[in-house]
Length: 394
Ligand SMILES: *Cc1c(COP(=O)(O)O)cnc(C)c1O
Image (cartoon, rainbow, N blue to C red; front, side, top):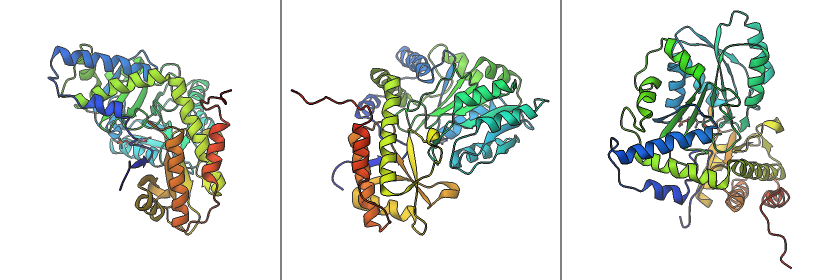
């Protein structure tokens, strides 16, 4: 099809040309002085995005690998952890923990909001014997479009006076939603390259606290590839214990530069502005946003419920065929009931409006009951919402 494809799924997100160009470099010797300079630049640069002064580990892996790394470096078989059922990704992380013999207390959820700080606080307050070794939460639940309030969860842990480690999945929130590893005293922040960081898939991250490192000295789950100690030893010289994803690291260096040129606060504000416009469109169509709690509606993506009797995957197929746009599918228990519109990474007002126009036309083509005017509502939202505008020139 003519023109560019609209990759409007909530990750992998579209990669800016500037990053693609940075990646298109000859592969260099990963034991050379030239590499060490790149290694040091990304290992240090990363910290500014996680907002930490502590080490960040970079794996050649998907986000799932970084999930596993957080578990095997800190926990022991038979340990209990507390997790919250925010959606499909929380469920998957839970399954990984279970496979390693971890007992998971899973606070049930209806996939329509973020993790409840009060419920977490209550569970911890009950746990006088400190059986719970870690609280593990997904910051931005990409399967539903609900963002959990991490600062409030930190407060709940503190209020309960509980010593559990705090581990947070920021795979789809890092570099799109305000996040503070040090200030919120997170012990392990898990992330990935292909969402807010605007890179292709292939890098996984663990940002780790002193407390997590101490836990790593005592825990008994075996690991080799994922071992933090091996990584940290050699990272201090800018190198990696095994072959890193060299060209993705060129991309990462560029992504970090781009984020700081725009300014992290501006990046977050842009995502908020686009998300508000997307929600305005969904409401104007008369469709329902999956996340019910306005304060938790995601800046990164919007999950939309299909009217009953209409199949979300069939609708997505029509959108792809007619307008060359990819929308996110419903995952797990909301499969075929939900579609997701990504508005993250390289995305601006006009990209979003183009995507929403595609959705609105495809709703009509697929015979999904809706009202028109979603794109107009999004335009009004963008213009009324502090977007960068030049007032009429005199
Ligand atoms: C994408 C995603 C994952 C899984 O990452 P992969 O790179 O596909 O392994 C985990 N958690 C969240 C919140 C995600 O958005």
